[in-house]
Image: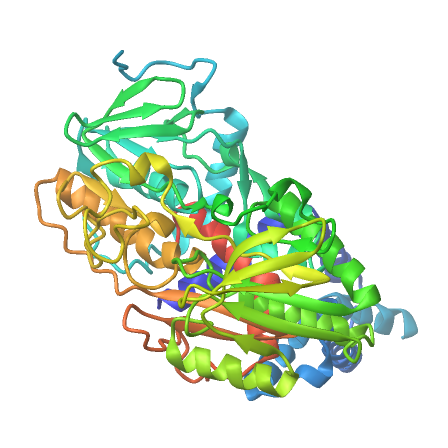
Length: 113
Length: 449
């Protein structure tokens, strides 16, 4: 329980340090979402495969990029905990990318049709 | 001259600004997510008009101030410390090895002190626990009902003949401990050495240390920097320990020595740095047999002997006998962190005369206990919070990898996540040190974890 509380606080403090960036990202995402929701013919289901693809691509790219970003390297991943951690972080980046890609992709499907 | 708490003055301010109040509201928002996570039993706020003085505005002092301001309703809390700058000391080794810019270890104490706490911007000069008075360097007397001693340590470079902290960074002289500038200068000295290679001496004194892992991290990282520069062949690193080991926890000590043997780092035991000729780049080591050994060097990392600051050492608060008496460390019960002779006095952090070296992690675990026990004492109840000596040290083994070592008073390894092997070097432990421990530190400072 304590460890969960500690991790929540770590995430909170990191967020406090970059809050203007987070605020801008959330604002931009809301704009994209509202635009997509109001767009007539936006096709969410059809847009999902592309969004998943973008999320997967970003996850892969992040898995390659994150170690160097933290002054480490993929060659340092010698322990299962390292891989869990790296993939978790990379998946986080992928999820954010997917959150942006899905409404955009749904709107693109509407335009194509 | 006696002082009663007074409104804002030049060297004493009541910390309470609108901007800071907003920041504090923001900072305490996660509390809404759950008040879990303290190692002490929860109780309602204690109503009191007690005067609580906290001597020291480092991590321990401010963390306890934040916790007490939530636990005590009506207490008059005063923090005494002349330092305006708050330094994230666990980051010094990162600055000193070129991993972090120096700005990352610099903050302002004013940003972390809770609203309503009085801050006397002076150093503590004297403790009089009989009269319950703290005297500052400026001669001001501050009476208290309860006292928290959080003064940290005194870096006793004076015990090394010829040592001059002012020239760290030049002539191959390095020392990470004095502060951000010294850490930055140490990196400059390391960079210069890595260009040329040569003889490197890494020292360890015989006294208790704050962050006893720092000398080891510096050694690992120097070796890594030499390897990165392709200068290993032209260099030799020798670790000179004044003790019979390099780390107090045996299993960690053995592991580090094994690694160093594989990395070609030599170790000599019972060699205490006694003198240094900075201009001639020569260090003199004393052995227990009374002999002296003179060694030339191109790079030296000096770890100073440490003791309690004079204000504690020369006061009745210090241990009067036993292994902690020589250093003048604070005589607290190692479990409750309450003073053994003055029950209205508590200690936190490096100043405590308790087993094992201390780090920020020690404060993380002990600050809630000290605050709780002090509140219990005010309420007339016996202190029931128990500290097990928890300390943690993310031991960097090279750029990109570390071991996350956690242990208690008994030297037992106590990993927070039992599935993770403490002596396994990992990217995860590195990430903790490099990216996550400062946010955790800030949460401790604000009294949340």
